[in-house]
Length: 282
Ligand SMILES: Nc1ncnc2c1ncn2[C@@H]1O[C@H](COP(=O)(O)OP(=O)(O)O)[C@@H](O)[C@H]1O
Ligand SMILES: [Mg+2]
Image (cartoon, rainbow, N blue to C red; front, side):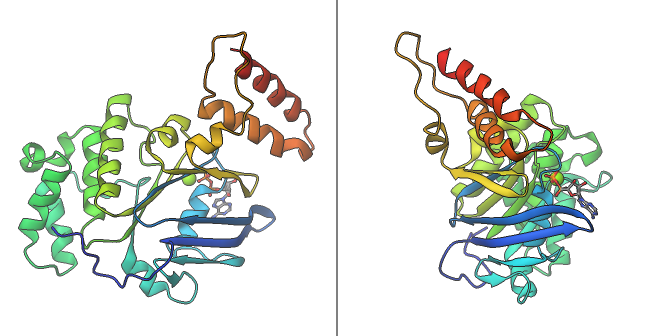
């Protein structure tokens, strides 16, 4: 399968988000979210449970309207050019869309047929090979491991060559081995030129996969950068101790703690200071 996109490629970043705000009744979830995702890169939106990650993804996928702000995906405005956005994207992750009674290959062929693509069999075989599922292709999906199912799910979402793929917590609930399998599949996607926006609450997932990481906290992106840039936010380890690079976890708690300063519940800032001190003295 060739990776020339079937959708109009528009110049500029694959995703551009500016001033996005969204409330559910009284609950203000997004308070002005801004970020960009370069084409062919992996971008991780990192945040705790309830931070608003799925809300961002649903807005970008045209499933939900923002209250204010603009977002463009593949050059198309999510509010005004929803059809263009939908042709450019696929969304997968939290809901396994695969059918357990069919085998892996049949699932892929079915979706290719539904999309009226030429030669569904060849498309299916190519995707099975790319996701190391050729052997498993003739087995009923009901017999697959969690990692195999998720890989098949990602493979299915690639049918039709979307130029942007949204993976909403792609490894939630998977065991460590399955997570690594999915990570490898995601890396291959980006190598093939697909832009990947993934959401995760796992710091190691962002650390392993992402070209850039943005931390969504209390409705805003409080940090956005490469892993190296994020690590550089913390003071370097002191010389009299064995040097330890700060992990993304150290950075996360330091910046989340700082942003929580105006939190009415209190002393998150002090907590972060303790952690910051600890992490730089190790
Ligand atoms: N349809 C909805 N109606 C009301 N509240 C919602 C709805 N969807 C999400 N929320 C709330 O908005 C917040 C953010 O949710 P979500 O975007 O799903 O976060 P995340 O994906 O980061 O866990 C949560 O507090 C959640 O309970
Ligand atoms: Mg979510």
